[in-house]
Image 1: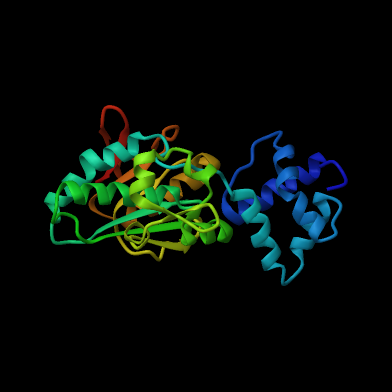
Image 2: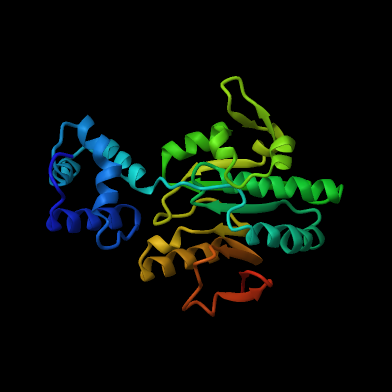
Length: 275
């Protein structure tokens, strides 16, 4: 990007991004836009953000649009992020569903899963629960979704560099659930990988995923406007089975939907049960 982003270009790009995927860029994030889109502009021989926006308006530019959204929505993640949700899953939710629906499959949705650390962390917790309580929760299916094709490609492969492995994963779990790969990385073991199915999904679009017992939607709603957040949470409610649970991020809260969800204090941590 050879020119600085003008205020007009930045406002126009903010509108494009919100319309395309719901993300609401804050003020003074020009540096983030510039750093994430620099390579795309170079590859398309564009000098300014305005030129990119003009190119995006042309017919048949779906591939470029996807590339821009991918660049702006790709976020770093880590294993067992924030810890509390995984403790709640292990100590409260899995035991409850093991007793409540012993013959029924348990279905979990990991929304905005990025490169797969969250759904694979969930699968590890499930596997540890099964080992501690043989015969329980024999049928668990985890659906993991993200808007970004590139992060889903990484997630499906299930192979991570040592730097990524070290972010939140204990040596004990690394030894239990991963094997060394020939190129120096670490490959997640088949019994964990087989539990998770990855799908491309824009949270603003229809959810054709079926019904779930637990929805993990963490650290993504902070990027949406209040109206879009309410819409997403309402539609997630419709995907939950009776008595199902919604788990949000540590800095996120559920406001304005008391008719849909009941707050459950977990000390520490809060989750929400479908009414």
